[in-house]
Length: 378
Image (spheres, rainbow, N blue to C red):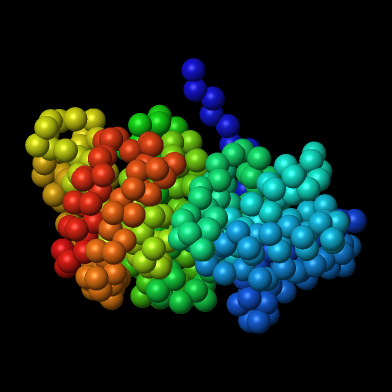
């Protein structure tokens, strides 16, 4: 038996942020990044809350939030006696807020009632509707996925106005992360009819709109569709989990410090080829599903072999159009650094929680081969 549940209420469309003005008598702990504060953009959220609530802003957030920052947030949250957390930002801010809420309710104040609202300012992680959070042990160079329904936001607010000024590199990094979420959720061993439907729609939305927002960030229609795609893909992988692409990206990101979306994009063609495993069985389910995705975006796919070739070529061409690196080397990683961490990355990838859902069970040698293929230009 499978249980399908969507616990997060989604507010989207015109004036979605105005719904915040309905909250009153709350002690609102806003978790965000320094840019949102320095730019003044956080006012779009705080202005809706300040008249009837007490507000404290915690902006000591950095990419790949380390445990030390989360500990500081927990201390500030509890000193403020927050009754509501509003996470505003990309995946790092939302993931950090999730961890703060979880450890507060499990260790500091068990059973404390804290309303949790997530407002993404990037179209990438889908973190606003997932029970995933990734936190980092900076000293050990290790990322830890936290997976529990206890960190699901009660409300997610999707407002494209918050992403229309995102720079091109952030736009494409996060957009290609969405594409990776779609691909991995679709072929996950946990995939079902519901996650498949969500992954297919988000996949189409990304291919139709990512070039548009890359060329013109003010295209609000394309922005909203990418924002929706991010959320829909998050719903898909929250049901099905991800796979080896993210397992390697988590491990390599902690060691090589390449932005997460870029890492996923570098790895994608190799991961698709590996998972399809055409040499063993050209008509296996994973190969057929990749072929179906190729058909959905109008590519030649009369059989799995042709479909997978079309799909990987389309991703390589898209990566080139978006001016993204096609290898670790083209990103700037030196051979010596790569060789130093190659084994550690492979071992960490195998132990990553997302790898468990991959359709093909990898060995350490498999992962090292994928890494080596991804090091030089494709």
